[in-house]
Every structure is written in structure tokens, then in C-alpha cells.
Image (cartoon, rainbow, N blue to C red; front, side, top):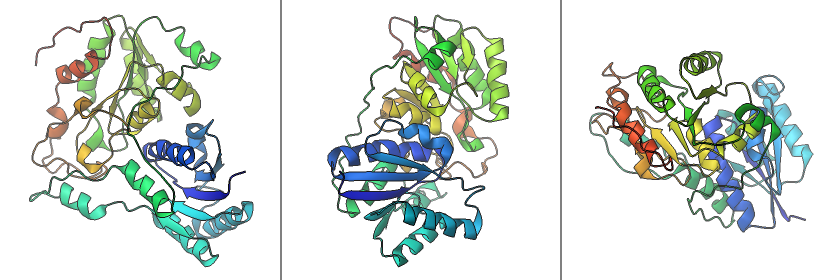
Length: 351
């Protein structure tokens, strides 16, 4: 039986929670006396399925544990659910800080993530930008466990798990007989989203050839856009609303390559050891959010003088033209994807 039981918080967002997965796997693999209870939103539980010595605790922060009273109720629920030896706060927001205080008063030692806000502020300011690579977020997560006295070494390698045939996935995809390309064209903020008209050019070009393109999304608007593209172009399949996160991961594992923004799609594919061609607009790999084990050669960005302008892509473009994204031509994207499609030569697209 595990001798140390670590309580871990990371409530949102999907991409940030996905980045914790290789870290907690490394913690558990390198510290066989540790058990982790991971607290997050119910929708993210599928990311942690099958991890030995990890218990996922789903918490509904919008209803069951809403507001200050709900937060205290959550504290009591967690405090009474098991005997913990330490707390690892991988979120460090207002909610997790309040929970930290309550656990500290109960005598539980803790550590929390340093998000490196000062360095990111210098990197995103304009003018007088300080272009310095920030520590990877996965390493920041690992530091929390290191401060708790645990051994954690991250190798930052892409490792593709064994392919698992699943009836629900096969019902959507059929057997794989040609290359599969995933496309995750969405992000929470406009500053991260490759313009849809340019993304449609990429999808249109890819669809003309013997590959299958799977579109990933989540919101009703994203579902509508994906359906439009799937109806318009051959060999294009929308997956929106058709598979759970856990089943979706089994499909992603079979992709030859994923095309994604600096968003959840990049991190979900990274968990399955799949190469990701990633597009960066208002953000930049220097901020430390690159996919786990991904190659810098597959990251597309313009490096204009104002990039990056924000940590999460939420700030409106002060130029008003999003040149960081419009400057990326479909041909550049196709060229990056092409090297991962075996026995297939992509046509040259004029710049």
C-alpha cells in the first residue's frame, strides 16, 4: 500500500489539465510509495483513466460547490475523504488558494505552482519585449512535487501507447486503411485561432487526397463549422459530440499527425505520442506551453515584433489585423504536415 497520499488540484482548462498527465505519471512511476488523488472537473476524468495509484475526484464547481459556502463544503468533503500527507496546488488561482489556506489551518503541508508571471509579462509587453524562453509549464508542475520532496524527472519524449481497438471508436472511423490527420482548429480566444478561411484552404487541399481528416471541437458553433466542412469536402469527418474524452484519446492515438492551435488539441495529441503541427498567433512557444515532447520544427509562428502579445491569447490585437496569424500561409501548414504522411507526396501550393 502506498505510504504517501498526495492531494492535487487543477480545475481548468482542458489543455492545462492535460499537461498535468505526463507529470503525475512520472511522479507515480518514480515514486512507487505515492498515491495521488487528483481533483478536477468531471469532464476531464477520461484523461486519467487507467493510471495506477491515481484516484480522480470529480467536483462540480458550478453547482454542488459554488461560491464561498460551496468552497468550504468542498474542503470538508476532501478533508474527510482520506488521510492526506501533502497538497500539491497545480492551479494557484483564487479558489485553490482559499482551499490551501483551509488545509494549512488543518495542518496539511502544501506546495503550489509558480506561474512565472514576471517573465511572461516581460515577454508579452510591447515595446521593449524581452524574448527569453520561459520554463515549460510541465516543469513548473513537476517543481511542485519536487518541493514536496519527491523525485520527478521529465524526459519530454513522445511515446505512443499501444493501439487499442474500441467498438465505439471503430463505429465512427471504420478500420484504418489510409493516413489519418486530426485537425483541432479552435481555441478559447481569437488571438490563437488560425483564420477559418485559411484553415478551410488547408482542409480543402488535404481532402483531395487519400487520407481521412478528423475534425475536433466542442461548442455548438464549432460543431456547426465542422459539419459545414465535413459536408463540403470529401474524406472529412466531424467528431464533435460523438465520442467521450477517453474514447477520443483512443482515436487520437491512431492519428499520423495532429494540426492544432496553441490549445487543448495540441496537448491531447501529445499525451498519445502523436506529432503535432501547431499554429501560434498572439502567443508563442517561448511562453512555455508547448506540447509535451513536441518538436520545435513543427511549431509555426511568424515572429513579428509584437508576438507574443498575451499569455493566453485573450487580448485584442492592437494592430487590428492579427498579422501574426494571417501571415501564416496554408502552404506552410501543408509542408509541415506532409512529412508525417507515409508514401504520399503533397502537391506544391503557391505562396
